[in-house]
Length: 446
Image (cartoon, rainbow, N blue to C red):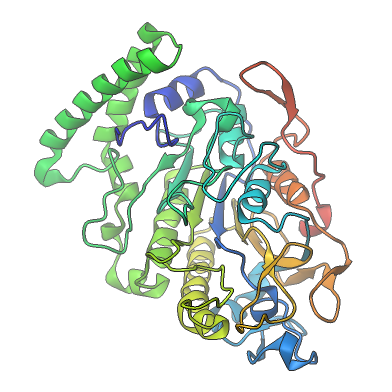
């Protein structure tokens, strides 16, 4: 499998990506230029993070205590103290709601803005029949805006059972719009974001290797995909230019950051991946998705899918020790840095999962899947700061005002990037599809 262009699993198809972007000259000017999605894979608990219910019975509220934030009347979990100090810079949506309690279907919905139409099982992977991820749709509609990929995913695809789950690549829009997949842990000494980083000490050798890989990819693509091979040559050359670009290489190189900055984000995969995302925004990448690593009985363990089913750790202990600290440090550091660099208004940060957790603890002391009411957090990008949008009932089980669907959330993101959420895109059979069936939520915007 080539690192430069994985056809089977939707990794980078860099020359194809460049070919497609060059074919679209129209660009939209907008004050919002970039989006960072912090994806908390597994389903973060609204009751233990952003929508605590201190007056509810203990079987609902748990043991976490709410703390005050910088916004009077707004409280969040005691285990997110840095986020509490930045509450004036983000909005908490406490009324997210949909009907898919399955990880695969829920994740697909929140990343593509549509429901999955094909039968799936736990080990189902991505398919070219599927709707595209929002990053792929933006790439298709807006084309290139910088000299680096427009859509980046780090540190890996969400794949807790070993197969990348649906909704994370371009689907029926084709491999040209797949994300640049970094597929490496930036918290480890052997971090390698792939062909767009060439260390000075062996830059020439690595670049020669890339040329060989791109030639092999061209031959493989000619056999597997229908495209103009002659046209491909110019895009292959541009790909090589990106690989040898010092600016591009530095953007992907987290070791360029001071130790104090890396410490502030947190010396864990989520923190360092979020730091890379900030560097991507500074370099001009349009959309970066940072996935909270989760592998059942592997690296990251259950992630945010904390049912507490043995041998998994108890839910509240897992949240306190493994989930909330890295989430708090990564989100807070990103918002602080974007604000300090004058980039927060031009960058929309969306922190979300595929759904929330049940109001009541299960028999093992965990919380199960709950899509009917959960929370998300939005910062920058023209979104109001210091606000709470929507509300939930006394057990955070159902919205009591302003329910917000994944379709509406993504429609709002498209709107902020000046993309018509009701624009039409076509699949491989030339069948039309709306970009989104949702409506932009103007009440979220400043």
